Image: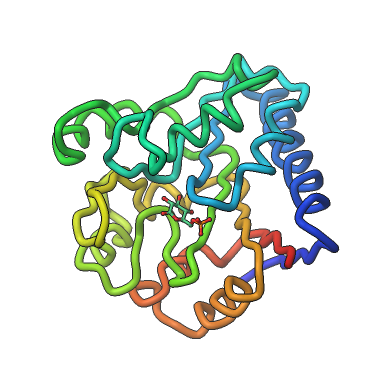
Length: 224
Ligand SMILES: O=C1O[C@H](COP(=O)(O)O)[C@@H](O)[C@H](O)[C@H]1O
């Protein structure tokens, strides 16, 4: 397992360095390919990285941006990951990117799965994958000990799945089969609790600690 762990003096330095790393990897890929895909988390952590990244000079018109996962709420809802992206990433220079919205407006995430399976497929393997992680060691919408997680971790899982076994709203997630093959993979975490959770995850099975599934060939970016 090759996991690089980078500790930053503060969150601002982290955002600066990580945004420049992600932009560099996208640009490098665009030198040899017509397009690139960038897959990012929602939640409370990534906004500062998104803001830095949105100002990066690169040919955003050839980049497709998508989320790791989405909560099944409309784009105006404060819980929407898409809303976070529109506010902090899909602006400035990154406004030119193509956005593949996982929230289709269907009444349920299950109804959206066939169309999203087709829409996501041309963007695999993901060029640059940024993952987040909750204190409970979930990543994307793959939650510990959830009934769907075993299915979503299977090598032959479809690339997207509806998730029901969470306390809040239903969700739509990219599965391990889509996330695992990324060309470049990064994990963004902040705070002592998440660092400790990551250490715990390394000793557990991915069904108990879903982030564990992605801890090979990954760069972890951490600041207090
Ligand atoms: O629910 C979610 O949580 C994780 C972690 O979020 P954070 O608030 O602890 O940063 C996030 O990676 C995922 O995309 C999101 O849907």
